Length: 166
Length: 166
DNA sequence: CTGAACTTTCAAATAATTTTGAAAAATGTG
DNA sequence: CACATTTTTCAAAATTATTTGAAAGTTCAG
Image (cartoon, rainbow over all chains, first blue to last red; front, side):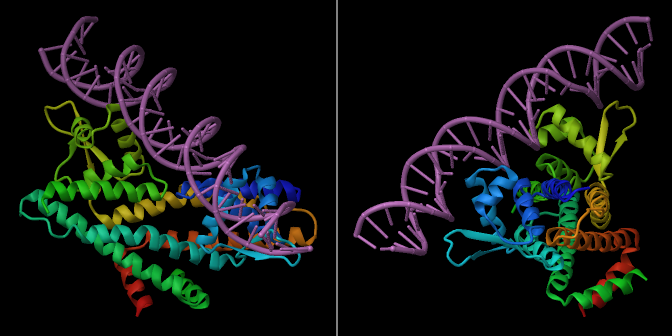
């Protein structure tokens, strides 16, 4: 397989993968493109490579910067912005996990905790309370474990997981 | 808060949460409805409760059954099907994790492993290879750990996580 | 076997999301 | 400051995903 074929396949796959997990396909493709680029790219180069409009490129680059997965840099004597991705895949992973925990797990925990004052003692109320309570507990446990994972040193995590698996 | 308000809030929240994670909003809402229902519900009751069409209800119920999150039952002397959800939230969680691992993690691992035969030795090829290789390794580790978690006894997992957190 | 009750299917309609592209805003250079 | 370059914005258009509803299919009691 040639490099270009490989790149295309990778970008396509990353886009599909992202869209299955609630991430905009194009955003994931821009990310993929930058992940495998040996140097930073301008908005025009990204538009060209992925065949997308300027507005779309801009929007998704801003989103990636917001997720701290992409940074921008300026080159001396050039007014354009150049973009590059965090290349350390471990960091990429923990960054994504940390952001999604914050953006999607924490809000639902808020809502769940607002559901603990239902009045009544019918079977219906009991089932509701029990379900909400169990989800609350598992969410809290998940939150704590993700917090720990995203905050800890990678060697500690790896060795812990290796121990778990043996 | 009354039970009905709580239910509405829970169903709405579960739907939003699902849609952020690549799951159809209505499917998540049907699931939420069944999670907090004290007894099994017919398609008509679900259509009524969520104000959705018969086709939509049917489609999402089949999908939930496919995910093994919902089961159907027949009541004596009644030709209708009745649906009920797995109520054990731990099981629900591990079931979802296991299914998504299979449906979305494994396919990308397939594609990644098909990308290891890129020819050349330019810097570009090296960056590509390194990135793909790192993602491959982290995917493999994630796969193993999720496999372990979804297959193990919950007490073992809980005690392991408690140890991790202390 | 018949027909009522129920379930499934799927083309068309609707809704939600994403993308475009051109205008406006911002930026940096001389 | 003037102006050329670059970035941002956002309403409209295009695309994608979801939902509807009616027809077809299935099941089962009599």
